[in-house]
Every structure is written in structure tokens, then in C-alpha cells.
Length: 209
Image (tube, rainbow, N blue to C red; front, side, top):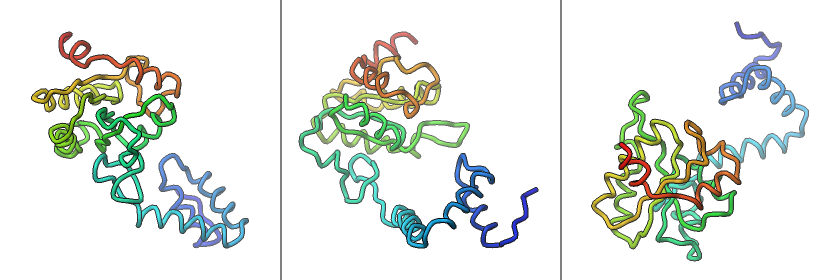
């Protein structure tokens, strides 16, 4: 049973905050009371930042990364290697790989991985737009930086099959990332080395089946 509060406004604030992932009602109460102790301007700026994020955020028309313009800063940066595409599940993986400082190519954000148990199929992801990028540009390599789970491997194999008609090298990150691990939780050194020591998808994932 939910705890009763003396203020309906506080109750509403706690309920809203506790709806966030990983935030229980005790933590939500502490956050709400913290907001009350700060000046009104702080809370207004906090709320404005969230509203702006929700209303004004865009997704890059090329790679589907989060941005403020039609193209993200990575796709717009001509110093990057645009012939190499790193395929990731979500925007969090882009940030994780960028933090390693070991990768200078561009990205493609799928928006998830194939997971029949969750009702997510290939057509729910940005796979066709990846194929279009490879078909319409001079792409030399596609790196699959997906979680080393059954769903991640299934997604990688599906993408490999979709790209097989094209003259492009398909690689996977080295297994410095443990089996079953998710990319976003890997430390930067391990993740950076996994990108640098990537290997051919065919050798590691197809010939051994």
C-alpha cells in the first residue's frame, strides 16, 4: 500500500518521480523534498530542460542518433571516417563508444535488437535504412557492436545476411565483452580494445555454425 502524505501535491510529485526506472518511492520522496528546498528558479530550469528534451529533440536523418538538427554532429563532421559504420542498439552505446576515444567512424542506431519474446522484429528496427546507406554510399566496413546475447547475435546475423549482396566487410567487436554483457555497461578500456581488435563476422559467427 502506498504511503499517505499530508499534501496531495507532494503525493503527486512522488508518484511522478517514482514512475522513472530505478526510482523507488523513498528516493522519489527525497528528490521531491530536495526540490522544495531549492529556490523556484532551480525547479523551473529543471522542468524546462525536461520539457525541451521531450518537445525539441530530433533524430539524425542519417544514423538516427539524438540531435538538435537534421543531422547529428558526428554525421556532420567531415573529419570522421564516413566509410566505416558502427552499428549499435541504442543511443547509450554511441555515448559509451565515443567515451573510449578509440573510434573515428560514424554510427547507425538500430533502436533495439530483434527479440521475438518482446514482440520486436526486424521491421521494428532501423535495419532497412542501414542497408540503404550501404547500397548508396562507398561503405568499406560495417562493425556490429551489439550486446553479446542471443538477441544481439540474432540481430547481427540478420544484418550480415541483409548486407551479403554488397561489397562491404562486416566485422564484430572482439569478445573482450563477456558473453551476455551489454555494451553500455562495459568499461571504456575494454570497450575501446574490443573496437580496435574487431574481427570478421564470417569467421567468428557463420563458419562455426
